[in-house]
Image 1 (cartoon, rainbow, N blue to C red):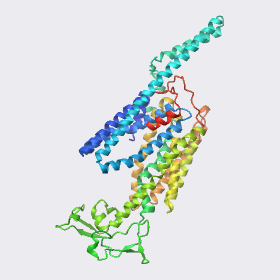
Image 2 (image 1 turned 120 degrees about the horizontal axis):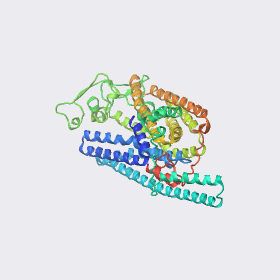
Image 3 (image 1 turned 90 degrees about the vertical axis):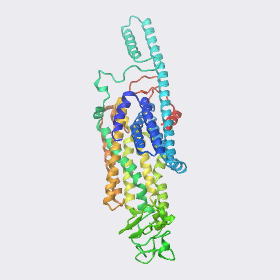
Image 4 (image 1 turned 30 degrees about the vertical axis):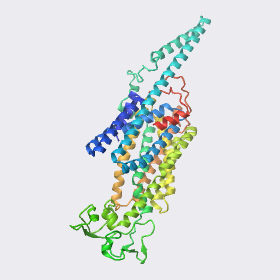
Length: 549
């Protein structure tokens, strides 16, 4: 996933975004079908082969989707289009988290994977529909353009007949006919553009993988910002459940000790130890503990072996013996009935409840992003300020992760801030990419920036795991300080982005922060991409196509 978007972007620029979308859709569907077959057959090799095929199209289809959005909504609605696409994707993730476990628990894992194959089939059908709509619009626009050109030619010839001795008018008429002739050579009446978009004699217009080397400092600053800012969001979501448990909902009760440190705390084995079925924990003051939102105290050591003539309940245990000279929380496996029913039932029950609570709270950023992204995208289209907003989002993330690292109160407010910062950033980062490169390299640019993003998303979890282990199995505060450092780098890259953008010359000066006007594309023929700006789409099309993507 780190390298594939780079090649996928070049492919999109070469063969067109709609064709690439369909091709990558076939790969994802074929891969998911294999995964489903492997799920029913309980075959890891088949499932891994399916995931490999799926991966060939999975990231690249995002590149193609981004390019389609940029082409179809190039002008005053591009940020809104990207924002709606982002919100739809987030809602899809939430829906998947709800539906897949339900189908898996009710029917089977293979059935849940088959639902994924069905969704991929719908996505492929939508990709084919996008290609059909694009082809139809190209035909209509080509015919309109030819008609307009013929009208201009007829008017020019009429002027020549009226003033045959006027050399300047005659020259203009010849120039008009020559111009129209050149244009008509590249247009097929049925709508297929037979002109090669990138002339073989023009080295500057060729699409090669090395084209990424021609990108300017503005693009690479945008890529750096994307890598570190998304590094504050997506890797955080991966560890958010454990971090919130440690910080708020399942805190370590280190000051508490059990009355019998080498005995179980709750469950069926407690009857072996005492008649009152209890092993209370107290703190240094003699008060009972733990309190609310604290993890029950665990035994410090255990030495329990299952009998040869074990009961039906003991037969469900995952192991023959449980011998620990120093029991740690990571040793507890609540999927094993020994821990969840026999020995530490209180610990597993409270952990399950706390995990559910943490899961609900950690969904706040995505929920806010799904709600706010379209509104923010609409505002960005109207007022501009992309580089400024990206910098503001990075500064907000500094405050968010500093609060999570140093404070112990409710995480709701910081996570609301995370959701707002993510919404702001995502609404401006992707529409900014086409503004930093030539129009015929937009697909390569999207592929490159996604490759840079995925490089960070593959490295950051390794760094976070190393920090977690070095910190004695704890996330706070070291892991949060890592996110703060990423946000600081994102803020500095955002400031440099504004400086470089303002220092450019001519019409390029301040382009990232300017409001992008609606492009008047009706009836025009351009050569910048597979759609080339010839589509005349309204706001209802924006909603339907973004939802489809």
